[in-house]
Image 1 (cartoon, helix red, strand yellow):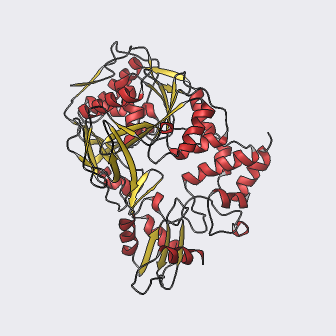
Image 2 (cartoon, chains in turn yellow, cyan; image 1 turned 90 degrees about the vertical axis):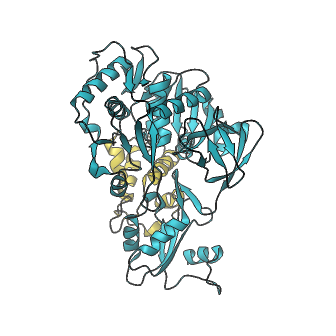
Image 3 (cartoon, chains in turn blue, green; image 1 turned 45 degrees about the horizontal axis):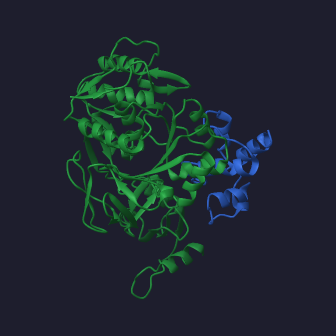
Length: 82
Length: 419
């Protein structure tokens, strides 16, 4: 998932293995990946294409999934194939 | 006077909220009630995200002769630039709405035609956005011209991914319903599944108002979409390939608008039909290439266009691309020169350059700032430039890779970024 994130978001300056699984994906605080709403859309497309997992704004679980790499990974694992 | 909702039957839907229609009469009743409860005087800063509430506040301000101010974003700097301190700020929570309470028979709302209806701001790279005033008469004409060109088969039900606070969203999701008998979905769907669900909540014929970015993610998601009669795209160039794919897979027609905050719509095209754009009816272009001006009777002055344009016979024109200094990210225009000026104004930055690396959409920066970290440069920069233009990659160096003439070659910039 980290590798696909790097590819989908063009984060050429990062190695997939360097992403801290609990670091915030969004926002400007220390340690955050500093992603924005355009990236959120790309993440939704990526998980749809590779895992058939759908994100919805009105679903709080979907929104919480975008907190960190780990939360996204847990969400994908739970909803994959459902 | 100009009349909002002057045509159309009183009981037809104006807005779709969670699958339920709000009729023109219900809406106008809510506008009168809201207008009566508001303090007089100051400008109205309309921050509502829901389109029903945004439209109630917009129309109520018109009824009372108050000016609606639309900031570029809800960031602190955009609000300050829009004069938030001297305005009455209204968000969704401040607008009560009870459906089913139509207290009036005729929905028509009279607003002063030559008064300023709205002040919009052009995206400022520098933190000093420029205001643009629109009268109600100008907005009514804009809507009539857009409808004449875009709604060849009559009114549609609109679902939009763009906010009503910017000109494109204002024209399509507010003015087409208020002046041209369309209805609009209350929400602003974001993810592809949200777009699909919102489209399913309105009846046919549907029009999806969006941007190339959203269109691409919706098409590539391969999620099933209800029938879409028409797709409208603006804010960035749409590729022929994506337009063709959307037309084929959704059996729809994809139209593009070329326009600006100052002008509204300048021209339109059906993307798959080629690179010839058609000017709006009764409009005119003067000049050539980098010095083209746009004239239309409803605009107070002619407008110098920031794109290079080739005029074609009759009402045609072709876009030749932008000035090398101009960049566009997420629909926002910026000037690299202005961004670089802001970077060099950051306390502690000795030297630096912001540029767009080949093959990237976002900016990157090389910065010399011995006393700062990359993160602190980014945070200081975020106070003066729009988030969209913030460097995705920000690399600190001991010096920039200048050549013997002191210039920065593109090749050297890319190499420094990679290392």
